[in-house]
Every structure is written in C-alpha cells, then in structure tokens.
Length: 354
Image: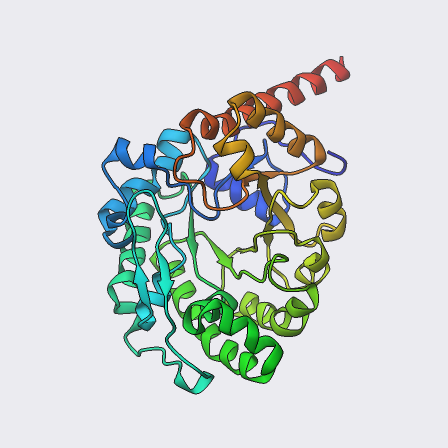
C-alpha cells in the first residue's frame, strides 16, 4: 500500500488494533469485529445462547471471547445487540431466541419532553451486564486483545424511542423536535460510553444508523455531523462510527467529525472510500455478510479479503453483525487470509531487496 509503513517485528493483537486505528505503522492488517461476531455455532460451542447471552454477564463474556479464542480475531466485542440502552430506558424489547436478534417493539415517547434518562440508568440490568462483562474480559485478556465496547448513537436511539417510521417522518414534519430529541439522547451515548471505558474497554463502536437506505447525506450533515463531532470530544477513547448501507455520499461529512475510524458496508468501494477519507479517518470493513460470509465458500471469502487488502484496507472486518447461521470456516478464513497475505507481502519485500 502506498505510504503505509510496515513493522518487521510481530505485534500483540491489542497493540496492532490501537496502532491501526491511529494510522501508525503495523506489522500486518488487523482483523476485528466492531459489531457482533456471535453465531449459532459459537453459541453451541461455549454453551452461551441467545437470548441469555444478551442479559447474563458470564454468558456474554464466554460468547464474546470466542472472537479471539475460536476465530482468531484481534478484538473481542461483547455487545451483541443494539437494544441494551433502549431496554434500560424502558422500551419494550422482544429478546427472541438463538436464531434471531432482539428488537424494540412499539414506542416510548411522542416528543423530546417525554424522553427520560433514569438517574440510575447505569445500574439497569441490561446496562450493568455489559459493564460487568467488559470488566471481566479486561481481567482475562488485559493487554493481549483489544476490548471493544458499543454505545448506541442518538439517531439509532431515536428509532427505538419513537419507532423508526415515526422518527423518520418527524425528520420531515418537525425537524426541530428531532434535534431536541437527539440532544437528550446523546447524553445516554456519552454516559454508557464512558462507563464502558472505565470498565476496561479500549475502543468503542458508536452505531448510528443514518444509512443511505433510509436518509440522504444531507440528513447526516444537518442532524448528526455536529453532534458526532461533540461526541468525539466527550468520549475519551478511540471511536469507530458504524453506519450500514451505501454511505460514500456522507463520508466527506464523517471525515470531518474526528472519528478514529468508520466501519463501512460492502456497498461502498474500498479504493473510492479511502480516497474520500483522505487519511483523516481510518476505514474498517467491509466483507459482505449475506452473499459472501453466509452463502459463499471459504475460497470466496479469501478472494474478497484479498481484494480489500490489495485496495489498501488495514482493518478488515465483517461489514456488520454476522448472520447468526454464518459458517465457522468462512469466519476463520478472514484472519487466515490476512496472515497469508502478510507473509506473501513480506516475502516480496525480501525478494525485492535481494
């Protein structure tokens, strides 16, 4: 990769991830999962099924660490759902089973004035579970593996509090009310994020689903860019923004927020995305979930990973939370391919120097 400095000595996974997020020299590309690596196969292997693994710290911990122990990733991320905070706010949640993701049902508020963040929100069971799991993961893995937490952004929390359809209609019918709501909800993003850092998280993913499938780039600029810039300043650790879907049109705005990295979808071209980010924000991604990791062969996974590496990506990851029935061999093909690619790159350097 043009301009990339490579180290000749091996790095520990945590060191590698933090260096890659900061754009510093690394020994090889990092392989992480900023969202969820949970699958039915992993649940079975460590006896930590959904929905219990969303709500019991020991099971959450046991399932999360399989990212490192069973798959070979450089990171561990224990927050498998996007509803922990919303459940703590009082949203109704359908926790589903091991074959499905939990979802918020109904709505909690009709306007910003009805949103209440409880004074004891950090002691709510579904919040406390995450904090206890992160603390235990930090105790077990210390400086060896990067521990990634997750704190939902205010836009996603708005979907849960108001209902997605109503929230999106509000952006058209009453944008000022949306902005007031985001101002309230961002405080929960900060509270939970800082609590996870204090528990031991090295990095936080901040999902905020202003996806190109639902809203135009101008919505990101007008509703979220300034708030995200503020969140970067208030949450004192490396932050990875996650937004699904086609997002190249809003990357120029994301680039200026100060996020350390952007976790991006396979709907976006790696080379074009790197050009847009101009080195101001690292990219993490963007291996396709439904067609490649879920349905294709391990050879197809290897090919897609190599394409991403050849295009210049230094942090490879599934594009979003994994399909729960994702085959194990396809997951393992990601770190295996990165290691093989790195060996070949080093061999080419040695051969060239001779």
